[in-house]
Image (cartoon, rainbow, N blue to C red; front, side, top):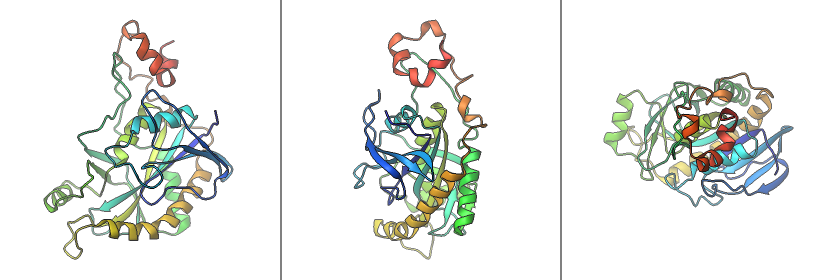
Length: 287
């Protein structure tokens, strides 16, 4: 199977990654079902990469319907160690303007219908998630934003809502009172599963609207989101390319050993079927 070291997840408006050389489609099977689409594997800025359209090409999968486990497991199976995710978000702050980029470093989970872990079935593991994104990937994205000369905000909190409907005004104002910075529908599960898979992860959040709290803006609509997305896509592609080139070949962060002290289950009690299912993730810790 084709291998890659860096994964790129494209969100709303980013369904392909121009510049990928020697690109070929790779369909990956996983114990958790099908990923959102075929992975596009090739080289970008001289680095082996795998690109995946989170919602499928043509945007056919809703945020709740995305098979997050299959997507992240598929990257792991391809050999990916670092993921850059691109996600459209609404702004919950006056100074986070549409067309700005955000690099959130914290999350609040308001989803209700999603599976956010690979574990279960007789194997219990609790990974640390106090620092939910990889500082190394965030720094590469920040440097790439600077060189691209786009307005960006490093840090802050991404509130992940269920969707697919946008927020009510009451919800939007509540989240602002909590100190949230941006709101989206997809990144939280990716971050949690990437940590369990010992993959470095960070999100490039493209600000497309002011949610619905802003008194000078109408309620967010898909038309408005698509308008700002079209302005952001070229910048996001440039930022991703530059960040890919900046990512270190060898990892020195804690992401690569997230499971080292996370497994609580007595090794003798783990069912054989579960060991086999999760061997790609935990095999090195069960020897």
